[in-house]
Length: 327
Image (cartoon, rainbow, N blue to C red; front, side, top):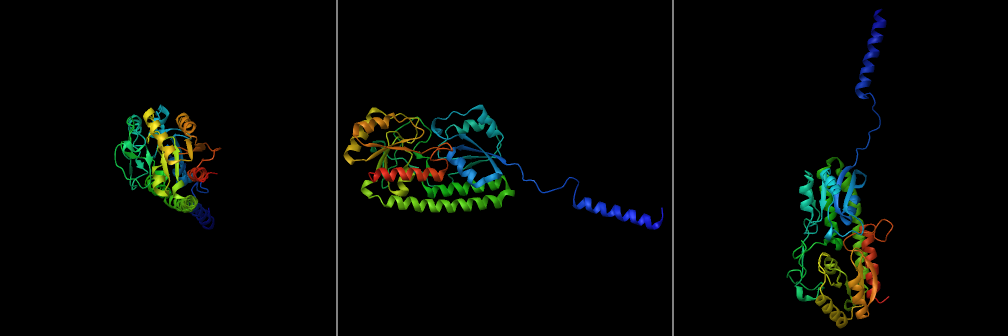
């Protein structure tokens, strides 16, 4: 082989080697990583995780739409989901009384992120207050209904939009810790969603401000709206305490009927995940009208009026303000 040919061959080989270093065999456009497996305990929290996580997460929700997390019994499939999760999001404040057992059964090593971290818990009022949760009241007694895991703490913190913003911040930080490569995505998604929550809160306040303060009294089937009450100035009455595990007694119902008649409450609402027979009976005996179905502890299916948290709040406020205005 001549020197010229040899140099040409060696030069071509060097060029090919350089190309292979720059572009390894099979290289092409960078593929997106598979979504990380994430668990959220109930549908409202699951929506928050999806809003922040976007396409980077695959969210498994344990208690789905129209489900009642108060009385939920985890399944073996739930244990498997928790075991395989990169991160698990819980509400906290005693909402998921079954979660500790599920975590133990699953053997998961995934971090548990409590979405209510940083929120000041609402304490329940005394049991002799007829379940009248006036936003001006500040009772600190035990919940009248034993038999559930909350104690005196109200876990329904998401009912205040300001608190929902805290949930989002905690979800964002939890996802970043579990998936640092997605930090920019999680921060951008959280920022965009927080702006939507700002607009939502402004609309809620504007709608309720149109209702005279003396007319802001309604009845719901269980006491899940204490944070909403404190934030927006509506008084909610309820025959049940903060958990649907406890049945309202005949004495509870009788006292509530007397209070409704005395204070001229205009409407009663049935929650989507509770038995409405008690409130229907109360409506019949007091003459107040049924104002419709509102959402407290869970979202509706995708085809329903409360498929997302923002949809849920707007739906509830629309029904509540219409009823209080006598529409």
